[in-house]
Length: 263
Length: 116
Image (cartoon, rainbow over all chains, first blue to last red; front, side, top):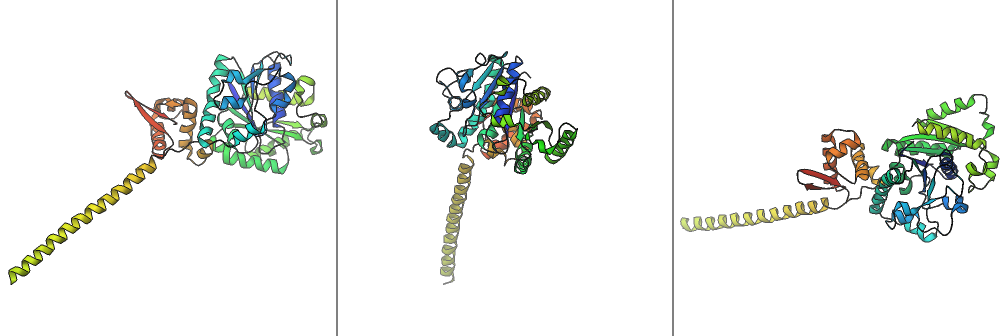
């Protein structure tokens, strides 16, 4: 797992990207690994809400500041491990949620985007060599836009989170063919919010679904996570790995986490 | 009479030679202008951003991605990163320089490619 950068991406919003990213990070940190979790969704920042209870005082440096060259990555990361009583370290980099910051990030030039992707590559050596981080997780924005493309290009493995909704599936197919294959990225697909009505549990039909989806998407499926009403009812801002460590959602995610170690 | 006529013809021929010489010079200057302009156009810096990469052939794309990571590299460094032949990287990087996406500089015997 040492030195791996994982990008969590999706073709459309609402697939559960952030809940996967945050809980995957917390799962690894609970196992004793040192994790950096960066919010690269500069248009719709969400990690600030997930970790609001774990952040003491006002945020001094945002990830935006790092990307704009106004601070170092060490300054932009906040250690929340103590607040959540984690075995390893969980360092989070937050995107600035103010309208001014979002507008600023949306108006960036192509030259700036080149520097941005270089910055994402360069933070590896600081994180992995100087800060003893084991794994870095990028929570990206959905679809094809600079922030998500830059994150995917600079990562080692990408997880595309999708539901069984046909719009999601078609979006993923298109994204894989036109973008991921063009960059020859190691990519896996995670099926999330799979409705119990599909009756794939527990009678082995899960394998059937996986094989059907792998055929359609031409990429491996790393896991299938059912749709849990209590997960949907709970705020997206809740960190299940901390609040409900025995939840079946997390058991599924732990399996994904294990598989990721070997990719 | 005949001599006069021949002299007149001679003068006209001299004038024609002079004019064609001037025409050639003008034509040359005009062509040189076009060449200079196109060179200037070639010198325009292009940004090898992620979206642009999608429109480049995969062989060139790999070189740019390697340079995102290395920031400044010789063809040998690039080859180590992309696991391709040094000659392939050299050709690819020089093509990107000609296209305006990369710059190169010489330091001693080594040539470094970089994104400006």
